[in-house]
Length: 185
Figure (cartoon, rainbow, N blue to C red):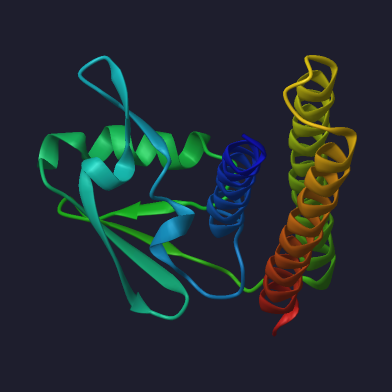
């Protein structure tokens, strides 16, 4: 029963870390990568659709992206979606594909991005703490219902804390890697 609870808590925590990694992928660094624009929602026949489903995205040069729509009629919609996004990039439409040139980041912009990364890291830590709190509450409920002993509850809480500590370390490593990536000139 305790092992099942711990496995469930770990699964929820891993999902939180996965969401964090996806969010950090969309944060711009000095280099171009498809993850910057993959999730931009494009209005396609009245439905918001992720850009990755409407076009191929490639990196022809370190500071530029090339977006080739599968259907040429979506060029204008893709261009509008990029302009509306918070990337702050101006698309160059040549009638066949869209080019995005990424200007070098200023020192001030890099610091803002690092602050944003730290904010996302803290949100992930809070999510882990909330999952831990819920799991401890479940352990206490099990103890109150006489399903487990007090010693089992304490052992369960210790294992849960070890799991949280390990995953908090992983969040820190992810954050340090992204911060280094952003500050790299």
